[in-house]
Length: 160
Image (cartoon, rainbow, N blue to C red):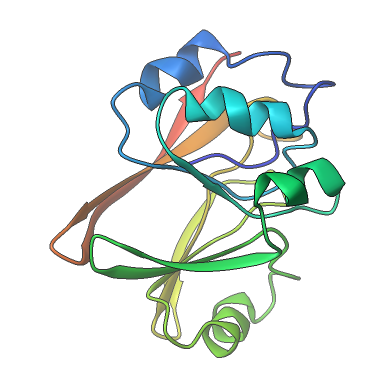
């Protein structure tokens, strides 16, 4: 899972440390700010991709098939995805109201990785692999879903 790749300024091509984690993935989620649809095409070479549009994504990302929000079933787990989840205050409750059927909500925008549970929902921001801002490393997220439950969620540091 990725967010905030910001191509071509930050992402010129998939960094090798990121590619290593994408090989063998069943699905790649991108939580927005791709900035060019070519990144989604590149990621599709590793696994099927589902993405949402971020505030820096233009018409080409929308034309690729990235909506503003997305709700999907991942091996029986109801998941929602949005780029900007709003302020950190009350985030879990707000996302629970916005996506009442979801057990997991994936988002981006802040570039700050987060894995939090509250108000009956788990929220997950993979951070950014290429624009770490104030973080010590770029990051991606890995999810393992088993029989309709989130068996494991990890934030993985990557060097680009």
